[in-house]
Length: 121
Image 1 (cartoon, helix red, strand yellow):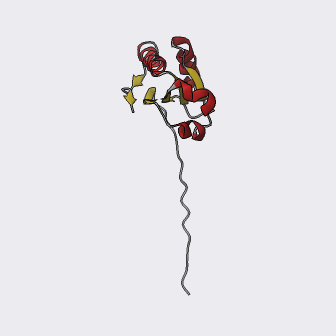
Image 2 (tube, rainbow, N blue to C red; image 1 turned 90 degrees about the vertical axis):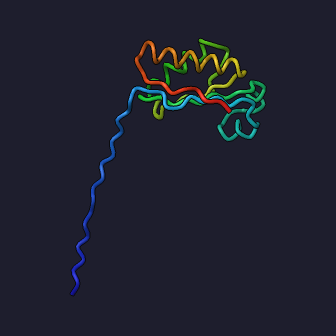
Image 3 (cartoon, rainbow, N blue to C red; image 1 turned 135 degrees about the vertical axis):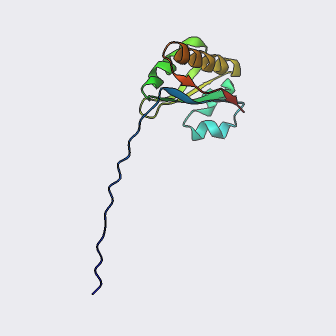
């Protein structure tokens, strides 16, 4: 008789967030379908002409950067998630650029975070 001992492995996953912004991207003149797929209303948001996408760790810092975004420019919040650290903002290209720049400067200078460079398409 062949003996089949099943060896079970236990895998422990651990998230050790850094203090960093890992994505700061601006999408200029996105297609209206992108607004819909993100859960944004293209009738309202499409006239804004830009979407800013950011991720930050620790994730709770998304609340702070959302506040900075709306106070630093005329950008509006599209989505903020304190559990994943995701932020989506909408506005004109210059509003979104100003908001992203203000966020990066604040978290780097005041919170000591590592920040990535802004990318744009």
